[in-house]
Length: 522
Image (cartoon, rainbow, N blue to C red; front, side):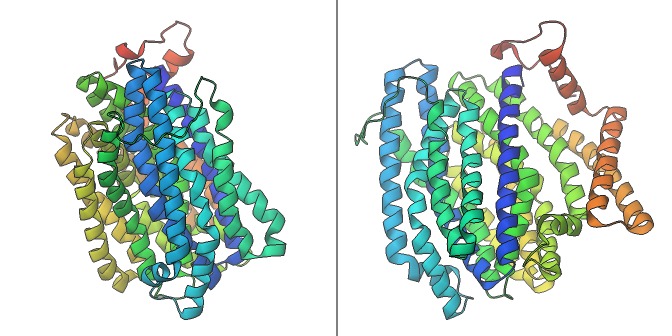
């Protein structure tokens, strides 16, 4: 990865960290106000519906529109790029409006299907929240199109700041109005967040693009996007159905189970989501460019380094989060209406999701390669397999571990399907799997040692409160990990050193993008 890519990763990582922090504040705020209650179950069932329907549009934008738009920019065809952008905004706004209408009309039967375990009162509550929040969709897809355009033009700050604007506006709205509106403040805040999601991006558009509604969906450059959209939409729906299936099954469990499942998943995203999202988002346009220029050797090297880098960062985080799941949930959520019982339930869910952290992150990166080559069908088939495995394991594992079993099922399905993705990836690339496996086995051993030593010391010797335990254990684990990585000559350490030298060294070692990749994995 060259300096340009590293800079983009840094920008996206910074924005992702900020967005995840604000996302956590949002979840913690709702947890403090609502705890693990019927109201929180209803609210998070509504957000689960959004988690299915919105990605259908969003993934279509990022995986179908962005490659076509980026290709036109590479070809220096600005007029075609502008035309495609206008058609895309028109198309996705129209689809969003149809989706809002669907939710308003079909809210009741939809809720009866996705929340069969809710009683009549709880279902009625969910229907009401869903109808109030339905207009959230109107501008969210447009904001994603604008974000994809900004990212294609290397304006990563503008493309990523939308998440920050969304969460900050929601938090402020709820803090001011919850005392007057109660839970309805949280529901309406979803609409407020979607508006600011678009507004914060607009100042970054500083080129000569003026939006004009364009309904020429038969344009030769738009037709490939429309053809690829259905399979991408199905893939997005299937991928996110996993989480919804978990909540459908959890709806028949004790009160607050759906909310605790959501809190555990959100907490995992705080730790792993910002890393995998930052890296995969930053390298995606570069992948598209390499594919357009038919530089598969550079794409192969880039993918190998990205997967190894993800392992180096996420594996120790997974170990630490699994070992300290109760302490992390205590610090993150246990206040206000969120009691010790909710902490125990959420900690189990959190631990179950930790196992699949790395595989979910790598899966996102590998899936981007398929999208870059225009192969949307294979991702759809793999997603179908993933949900089938998840559903089967859900019904099996919930018998033994309760709702923690639902999280374990999700992780297990991610592990199986990353292997399937690697198998089909051979069609396009010759990835150095031996180098990746060797490096990650070393990292697993170092991560276990680095996290286990402070864990045993804290659990059996010092026994401090949750806050001090996390601070001391985290510092010790990080220190041990870096020292052991250097002693054992982990290749990623050398990669990081060389990137720092190129970025800040005395000599001017900044390379052009086409002459990157002089650092090879052993």
